[in-house]
Image (tube, rainbow over all chains, first blue to last red; front, side, top):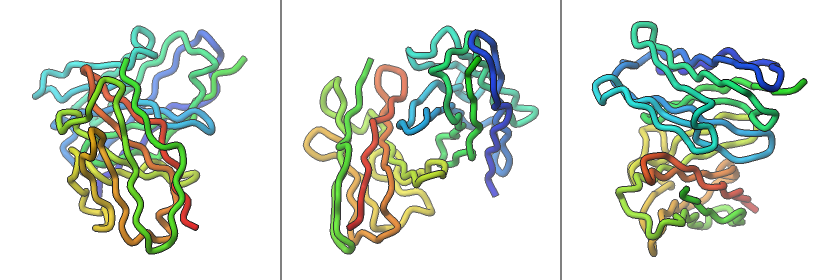
Length: 115
Length: 109
């Protein structure tokens, strides 16, 4: 059974950093690209960025809205994708999902940016 | 940056047919945009329905079909069921990045 489990969300002050994790099981994690997607309260889905598989060069791509503040990493030995979020703003408050581009989503983790 | 546009809301009767569309500000949507479609119900994570324009996932009911229609990506639901009431999002690959549409709220009434 394929599972994606996000973790690391919580309450964080503006300007601080937070790292989210997406732990994958049930398929060969290293063979696939992973994306991060968020959904602000009552809003639609927003694609944030992607990290390609090592076989595909391991490159990253980011949405313009988060480029330079957010970084996606992967550890294929642990089957984990990370979303490093720096200089957080109140408008980054959202549920954050990982998506594997094979069809599977995590359940999401809530990030609240507030003083 | 590419803007992807969907109908904000649509209403369909049970058993009916409805088509949701997905347009790109850069021009006609082609297979090279690798259109994906997702369904999301309140309080749940999105669920993938269609990838690469018209391919169903193993769990996608046959009443959902994807296509290209008049320069847009399209998702057609045939024989709509009450449980199909949900938000639907398209996702396009454009200019080296992926972009979601704003979503369509489908009401089954």
